[in-house]
Length: 231
Image (cartoon, rainbow, N blue to C red):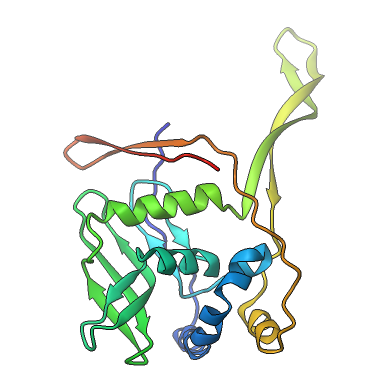
């Protein structure tokens, strides 16, 4: 199956409000890092949405918003970090994008040491496909929603002249696995040590092989594949 993407476009949020949310997040980043395991252990915390955090690339599936849990796992792995060009300390990458064909990419993140937002082009993590593969695994193994096909009562059209006839039809049903907590509520829980009872993540039982085919403007076809053992 060929999957197409034109690249994720972040939600149209007023820049002033986006900056406010970013400042609110980064000013409490130390608290979030301190409670990393509490967040990773609770799916409602894990999927906390962040309007300023996303990844984007064309042609293939997988880009889009990055929840808090995805960031924490990426920082822990090191794939979502960069050395700061100012102080050489670690930058926590919050958004990034690029081309899976050319490998050109850019990113933005926050350096705790410099206490400011940093932008950069290219990455110490080469090729750019490594980050794409990492996000594929995150979305496959830790999805917010899963789907299944169910049979329901419906109708089919009988071209023999009898018109609509009752029949069993298949439809795709989506189930959300968590009730994501807003960042303000999460920080309130952590600050007051009123941490929710852990609701562990449910790992998705998806095929352990992901293979996508993309074509560039010249018509050349490139196959991207990733095999991963599921736990």
